[in-house]
Length: 89
Ligand SMILES: [Ca+2]
Image (cartoon, rainbow, N blue to C red; front, side):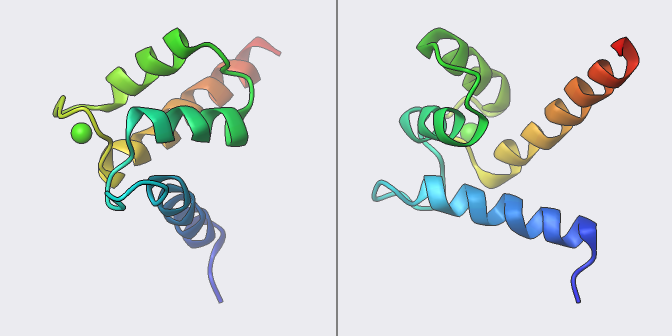
C-alpha cells in the first residue's frame, strides 16, 4: 500500500506524463503544455504572461522545456504558498 507521500509522488509523476505527453517529446514539458497544465489543473493562472514567468522560474537549465525534476519544484512553490496562506489566516 502506498503511503500518502508516495501517492503524492506518483500523482505528480502521472500529472507530468499526462501533460508532457501531448506533443512528440514525451519526456519534457513545453511552454504550451505547461500553460495547458496550469489552466486545467491549477485554474487560477490564466494570463500567458504569468504562465511564462512561472515557466521561466522553473526552467533552471534554461533549455526552454521542463524536465520532470524542474516540474517537481512546483511542489515546493505550492508548499510555500500554502504556508503563506496558513500564516495569514
Ligand atoms: Ca529545462
